Length: 143
Image 1 (cartoon, rainbow, N blue to C red):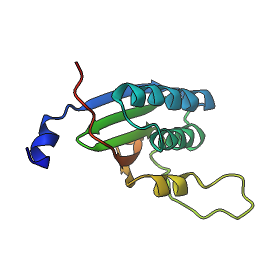
Image 2 (image 1 turned 135 degrees about the horizontal axis):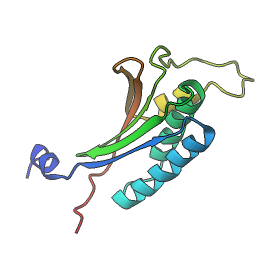
Image 3 (image 1 turned 90 degrees about the vertical axis):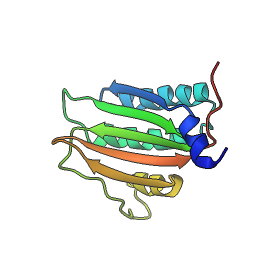
Image 4 (image 1 turned 45 degrees about the vertical axis):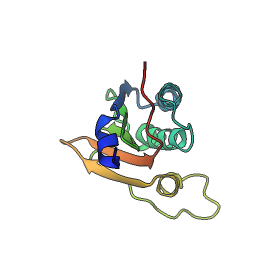
């Protein structure tokens, strides 16, 4: 069986949840993602670090009172994709180099370092999705 055939035969794994754009919602995103990665038999790190960073950014910078953010995880073949969608589409994230003594501002630099690929997709206004992808071992069959 060649690689393409194996990818077509491997199941697509999918998880989605809406959470409040608060520190508590960001923490819950990380905890739920960690349990999902365990149930799929995937390595926890660096995936949960990416979820934590993207969710924290949604809670801190993508927050609009009364509007949730969405965490979506899925695995297709050997790629795990993490997506966090918020409702601050007018503010697209951009990695910046913070001052050496700054206590914050390194999140997207961390995402850039840990992910195989990452980016931002503008959605129907006012939404945007920040995503990161990791190569993972394809999940085994479930019985």
